[in-house]
Image (tube, rainbow, N blue to C red; front, side, top):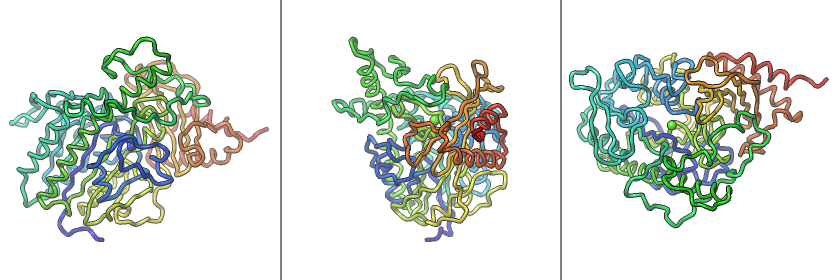
Amino acid sequence: MSRSAVPPNLLFIMSDDHAAHAISAYSTASATGAARARPVINHTPNLDRIANEGMRFDSCFCTNSICTPSRASILTGTYNHVNGVTTLVTPMDNTLDTFPKRLQSAGYQTAMFGKWHLGHGPEHDPTGFDRWRVLPGQGHYHNPVMLQPRPDGRGHTIVERGGYVTDLITDDCLRWLDRRDRDRPFALLCHHKAPHRSWEPSRKHFSLFDGIDIPEPDTLWDDHEGRAEVVQAMRMRIMDLDPVVDLKATVPPGLSEDEEIRWRYQRYIKDYLRTIASIDDNVGRMLDWLDSEGLTENTIVVYTSDQGFFLGDHGWFDKRMMYEESMAMPLLLRYPAMVEAGSVCDEIALNVDFASTFLDLAGLEVPAEMQGTSLAPLLAGERPDGWQESMYYRYWMHDDGSHRVPAHYGVRTRTHKLIGYYNDPLDQLGARGPATTPEWELFDLVVDPAELRNVIADPAYRDVAIELRIELARLQAEVGDEPHSGAEAVLAELLAAPA
Ligand code: CA
């Protein structure tokens, strides 16, 4: 198959915190993919349409598993130490080069609706879009206010909306599409707020799953033995969920701790999945619209999320971590002119690859400053020689005082993962606590895909750990990031030859 001579349209749908194991298209994830061993717990027929008519990526990862930084990497095609958006409190400079700006310059009509979360004001409002309307910050699920540019182009104005946020964002997208210039290609970014905390369903889905128990993840009772001490101290356990805000209920009296965890998990996961049911319905509306307009063949439809999420896995909620459930992004892409229906790709793909991919598919030059690699060959069913066999990850936001997740960096190959917790707040805004001794984790993803056994101190893994250390250094040099000297010293000691 070859790409069309007519520039393709792009419909980029991104949700917030939607883990791949909450999409039924991932029920049959390939043997080596990141989503394996994590049973899917819901049914998403419309998202599955994109997979069934396009390609499902089983090893797509974000390079920093948190909202604002991942969004910046997607738009700019660069790592966070390059684009400067390392944490939730570092908004994006809107003069940076992005793929929407380049599509707009090339004659595309461009728009974005929904969650922006890259800052507001003259230096951070969306740029590169003919039209935009966004939620302020995280925004609200019900009757949200939204921001849109003032007619005179100076700053933004507030619009009050009645209804449910996922419906409203889709309404805005479809209205803009209906009014588009039919003689030019479009690039539309539809950014859903759902299924972000605090998981508030639409009226339509309030009682979905009533009377049903959602299966518990295999690792719900993980006691974190052998993992880094800073990992054991994190505050993302099911018992850390707020009964009022997160669970919207009073904990029934008289429960044992295990019973309470089970009860909390059901409250949490049902609301999470209910908000996804609305996304699925609304994605269906957009796919139906493309069909009715005869645009299906030449429109690239993407469904992804800014990162994954712990769905009770390891006893946690939230993300941030370099563990699989958090760093794996769902990625479904339909483009009938190029992509074989029902295909699956298990090669490593990254959020920094998206910008290069979209420019490449539009027939545009990919600027050298974009650090990602176009996924176009994979989409065409090829396996290029020298395709990335490893990836670099860095979570910068050291201990926010709430989730207590430590900053860390590491390397994931197709078989192993090495993570260094440097336990140093550096100069990160909002970081708490003093520096403590760095710690390392090593997982063998082949024999331990659930990441339950840290083998960094196991002599049988010394050679593997040395190879990973070299690969980590190579990747850091390649992307231009700096190692942490204290953490590297600890690793060198761990891997020193026995006396
Ligand atoms: Ca997110």
